[in-house]
Image (cartoon, rainbow, N blue to C red; front, side):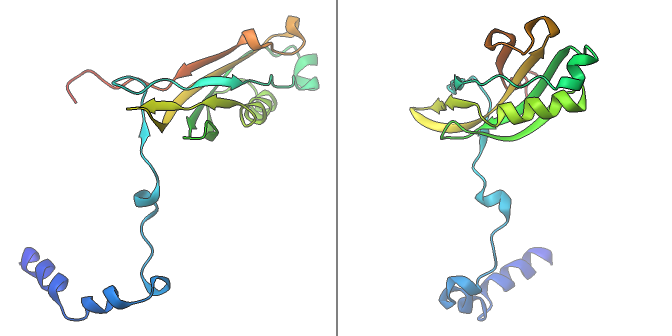
Length: 154
């Protein structure tokens, strides 16, 4: 019965009204249909290459408290090499997390390629804060491709 109902709805005469309606009156497409696919590194997809990597500032109060360690941020690198949707996946301290997010927003990348075309990819950036450095150096920043696909037969 459900299949018959679906077919009946698709062939109903009022459906032709949508084909002739102006675009402004058509229902909006779901956001997931409009968002380009996000790839993972490997299988013909190259890793994005950081080209601009400004260091985050060391929060003065966190420095005086001698808070040190690593903040890991997951990002999507878009087809223009811009970091998108940053989210903390390993927190250190809210003040240093904020500084890391501010810095990663200024990073730029050579985009990932699949079949010679730029594609969006997931990646992880690790920023290390050390008191001895006064502020983290570029050598303390690590870039890692996003999670690799499972090989468990999925």
